[in-house]
Image (cartoon, rainbow, N blue to C red; front, side, top):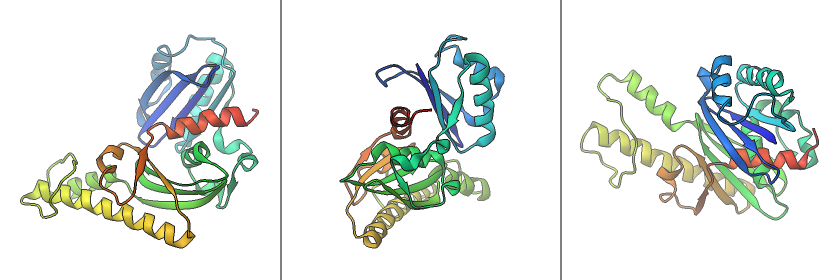
Length: 249
């Protein structure tokens, strides 16, 4: 069996993969709550202690939590955890940016889609809203914009008269009260941001792209953009699974 994991700023996904590269068990943990007791408790639901783990591969944007999980996995399963950036990624994908300054989750997303003949923009609604540009087998770089949820929280925390609001799709731009005005600003504001950034990427590269969106707000925006997009909530995990096949470690 193979263990893979995606350690994000908000959530951490850990999955057990079988010989056919299929996810057979999965746990999702709040990243800031991860500690040894939580890992011990949650791992019971996906794997028995001392089970044989052939290899373990993680992507992480929270180094201290990766080190904690790495130590736990080795102690309990005698499997070395490898962080995606430690692999020779240039073997399958040319990276045209400073690798130290890009999250390994974004590299995993890009590895999931690389193709000789196709170009992709991967839009991830995470703690930040990120756009990654993959042209053929080249990772060209990307864009980092404020995250939808983080921006909304900042607004409601700083503005006394704005209540906690759950975002939803809204048809009219002009709000008739505080809640509808905020919903309009965030929904149509991000629609405009996304469309404009994609337009600029296409103009700058002079390429056409398939667009994949992932993350918590994918379904909110999927049918309101100027472009046809595909939702893939597991693209990061797919990139990790693909990497376990591409690289020997």
